[in-house]
Each structure stands twice: as C-alpha cells, then as structure tokens.
Length: 282
Length: 350
Image 1 (cartoon, rainbow over the protein chains, first blue to last red):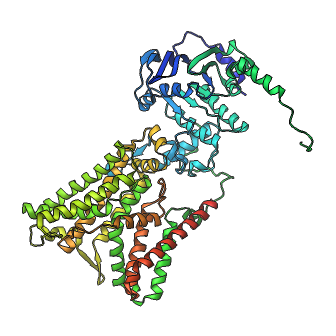
Image 2 (cartoon, rainbow over the protein chains, first blue to last red):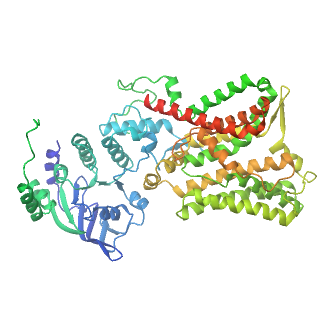
Image 3 (cartoon, each protein chain N blue to C red):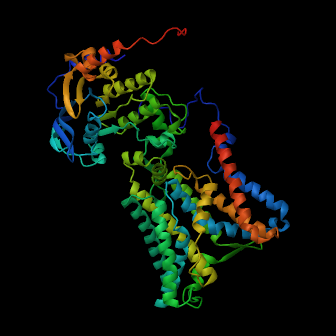
C-alpha cells in the first residue's frame, strides 16, 4: 500500500540537513548505561524506524527526543543546531511531537475536547472569553476526515474509540498542531493486524504531508512496510543502522531477532514435537 | 482548514449515527440520577408531610440546600479534578472566626475583617494545593492534616483571644449591617422570605457550570481528573489547575463562613466538623465520579437540594428528629444506587 511512496522518497537528495539528528548519544541513570553511542537521522518526508526488543533503550531514546530526559554525552541537533531539550513543552515548541503508547488522551472526555486539550482556541474577551466550541468540533471532524477517519460523533468519549482510531486521533492532533517531527512509540503494539494496517497508513499519510517520523517498534514487518531508515538497538547500544536500500526484510528480521540467537531458537523449536492433530482441528 | 471540512453551520448527516432524541441525551447527563432522586424525595415528603408544600417551607428547604450547596459546588469541581478536600468543613468556621476576631481585636470596620478573611482563606486553599503538587501523598492525607490543624487552631485561637469557645458579638460594629445585607439578608418575594444564600448558591452554580463547560480551565479540570499524565503530556498546567480548584473551595468556605458570622453574630469555634463529608456526598449524589474526570456542578447542587429536603422534610413530617441521620443515610444510599443504575443504563443505550 505504501511501497511506491517509499521508492519515491529514496531518490531524494541525501545532503539535506536532517530535522533531528542524534550523534553518538548516551544516557546514564546512575551507574546504569541506558543508552550508548546511538546515532539517528530524521529527515522531512521520511520515516526512521527504531527497532529493538524490550529493554533495548527505545524508551530512553524517545524520552531524549521528547525532552523528558537530557542526554549525557553525544549531540542532539535540531535542524542543524545543537540542542538540549529541557522539557516536553520545549520539544513541542520546536516542532517535535511525541505520541506515547498511552496516547496522552483522557478516556472520559469527548473526542473534540481531547483533540484540543492543552491548546484550546478561545473567542471573546474578559469574563466572556470562552472555548470556541463550534470551531473545535468542526476542526476535529475535518482533521480526522483528512486522515481518513470518518468519525460518527465527535462528542463520544474518546475511550469508546478503538485502539487504532485513538492512535490516529493522537497522530492527527500532532499533525494539526504543526509538528515537524512525529515520534511514535510502538503505535501498533497492542493492535490487531487490520488495525495495525490502518495506523501504518496514517503514519505514511503524515510522512507524505512532509513530516519527519520516528517510528519505534519491535515489529520489523511493520517497520519495513513504511520505513526509510532502520536503527537497531540492543541492550542500550546500536547494533545496526541501515537505509532501506541496504537491507532486506529477512535480514532486518534476522538482525532484530538477534541473528544467531534466532538460529539457536529455530534449532530448539524444530526439535519440539508437532502439536497433536487427532482432534479434528481445522 | 482542509477542503473536506463541512460548511460551517451545516452539519453533515451520518447514516451510522442514529438520531439521538433529546430524552436520550438527557439520560446521558451526569446529573440525571440526582434529578430523579430529588424528584423522588420531593414527592415522598409532599405526600407524608402536609406542610411541606407550603411556600414558606420550600423557602426554608432552599435555604438549607443553599448553605450546603455553596460548598458542594466547588467541592464537586475539585472532585472532577480528581482530588478531595477534607478541610472544607472546618475552613468555613476558620473563615468566620478570622473576620470576627480580626474586626473585634483591631476595632476595624467589619469589612476589613471580611477582606482579611478572604485573603487568609484563599491562602489556606493555596496551601492545600501547593502541598499536594509539591509532595507525593494523596489529597486525602494532605487535607486530613489541614483539617486537624484547622480544627485545633479554631479552638485554640478562640480560647486564647476571647477565653471562651465562641467569639464576641460584633453586631454593634461599623459595617455590620451592610455586611449582613450581603451575606445574611432576607429577600421577600410575594410574602415569602428567601435567604440571600440562595442567590449566592445560584451564582456559584452558574459560574461553575460556565467554567466547567465553556472555558479552557474547565477542559483542564476534566483532564487532570480523568488522566493526569495525559494532561501533563499535552501541556496542561496540572499544578495551577489544582491550586485553582482548592482556591475555589476556599472561596466557597469564605462565602459560607461570612454567612455564618453575619447570620448569628457570634461564631462557635467547634463548628463545621463533619460537614466536609456532606459536601462530598452531595457531589457524589450529583453524579461526580469519586475517581475524578466526570460530573457536573448542577448535579452537586441537586445533591445539596436532596440534603435540604430531607433535613427539613423530617421536621415538617413531625417525626422524631433522632431518626434524622438514619433516614438521611438511607436516602443517600438509595439516591446513589439509583444514580449508578440510571447511569449504567444510559451508558449502555448510548
């Protein structure tokens, strides 16, 4: 569904300044090495995937880009300029929006209130300064429609939407508020196959809108569907960094699963007896 | 905006969205359970107590409801914001004591005392809020501390200054009559006496509803109560919102306290203990979720009305008032169960 778009991106000139660039970034929590020597480039209109198993340092990496934590070594450059983000607000102000796994939505609140939460438009002055409810409702509906979600009712609590829809609302919100870089923390982690596809489509839509996307995932199949660059993390260090042209899905999967460790695992599983078939299983 | 946006003022019909009848919309409102409960209580006393339906009785019921409601409304907002304030009951007494004693000791115009009391009470609210956001323990514990401290200070300071447990009369002091007009006067409409607290109560309901539904602050109140981490992640000033909510409760305590002072002239320093629970219960009957993020100011006001009707209805029914607490408890339980049942049904049919 997105391969032709990806192929098109590959012809883009390589000498552009990346929107966000991490160069040998390290982070220590006391005597714990959470991240060491990780480099990552995020270009406009491209998707950079960060792959890694649990505890590989993906969350730490996100927190540095999102401004929740500061790196201890290496450099973080935003549009070529050296930066150290002191808060999520500063990251947001510099155009870096992060969509966390918990999506930062309030389940009991209507979709339109969630969409504008923290950046509500108002009209009127003095004591009559009030929410521009009409604008908020219309914009929410229109922006979601643009991402391809035709919402039945913007008044419904966002908790009643499906996981994929909620993810898309969070992405649409970041895009609407002028994000240049979108950081997505495992957007497909808890979703079924179809829902994952829907979310990946919106990720691609955000990319086509000219955003730089950082896609954190532990699913190489999802990453390879949309990604332009792949950075593999393992136990806090970078175990591989590839552009799409350099690597195949099989190789990515193999590296992601730990290469030789996967071979061992396959060997182990092959010896396991086949599950019984005598019960008329379909 | 995008080109696919529907024309303003022309909502697009969606075939998947069944037309919601106004009745069903009403069934989904948080205050519904309390409205049904209030109607039930009203009908009950209208049947069993002959004098309940007289205009004068209804004015008395409204008065009782308003004294609770002035506090129940800001307490409800605080609960929607996900927090409690156990010091709300004694704070009313503290506020009254400060006005009275400041005016008396300084022989100042009572309005000076009223002003000082406003600042002091708001400061207590700020203290509650700042303590909460600066430290980790839940608001239940923080405000339990404030509650005990205020209870002790009320008694201690009053005895220290006036040697008794109540304040000196200030009715002969300058400004007393005008302050009484504002906080404790009686308005006669069609031969029926209405207490001015009813006006304060209605004003608080209107202001709270406006803030909750139509301002940015209202959006933030729902958000900090319904998902604090999410709210913080999208840039909602969580700390400021909570401090503001505690200041709202403090403002209610100030209004309530000034009424107490100017209505009775003297203040008993031991009063107010236990009222904080009544405010919370009124808010819960009114449909506020005890976990935060859901509720309404109107609901809390109706919860207060149920309280007023029950406490006065028992008197009009000429029952032994010893049974008041039992009856009140049963009423509360019923109203809350009804509320929960109605809400479940409303949510299921959505």
